[in-house]
Image 1 (spheres, rainbow, N blue to C red):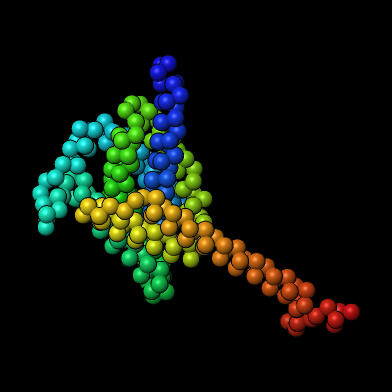
Image 2: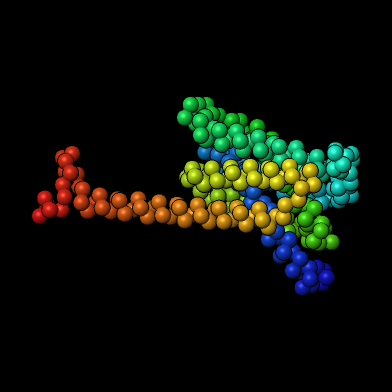
Length: 260
C-alpha cells in the first residue's frame, strides 16, 4: 500500500491521467458528432454509454497485455513495410474515421438542406456500434501509451477510470458547444479527418509526432474561438445600434430624434 502512495507512483498516475484525457479529446469530438444526430433526449445516454464502452475496452485491453503487445509483431509485409495486428487495426480505424468524417462534412454542406430531418434519422444502436468501433482504435493507442509509462496495472486502471470520468463530465458541454456553433462542428470534422489520415499513416509506419497534431488542433481551435468572439461582438454592437437608433413603433422605425 505504501508503495502505491510513493511520489513516483503518484507522479506516474497524474501524468498518465493527463495523457489519457488528452488522448481522449478526439474520442469526445467523435462521440459528440455521432450523438448529435440522435433525438435530444437520447444524446446524454448515448454519450455516457459510449464513454463507458471506451473505459471497459481499455481496462479489458490492459488485462490482455500479452495479446496487446503481441499485436506489435509483424504479421506480413507489403512493399517491404511490416504490417502488424496493431497496424491493421489502425488502418481500418483510420479509414473508417476518414469515411465517416467525409460523409458528415457532405451532410453538413449538402445533405441537411436537401434531406432535412431524414438526414438526422439514425438509430441508437447504430450510433453505439460506430462508437464501439472507433473506441477500439483509440483504446489501443491509449493502452500502449499506458504500458510504456507505468508498470503497475492498478495505477493504469485508476488513471483510465479518472480520465473517462473527466471526459464524461466534459462530453455534455463539448457536444452543446459543437452543436451551437456550425463552424466549430466543421472544424471538429476536419480534426477527425486529420486524425484518420494520421492513423492510416501510423498503420503504414509513417509516424507523425502527436505533439504536432495536437498543436495544430489547439491552434486552429484557438483561432476559431477568436472568430466566434469577434462575431458575437459585432452582433452585440449591431443590436445595440438598432436599439438606440432604430426602434419600431406601429411597424415604423423611430429614432431617438423623432422621440425628442
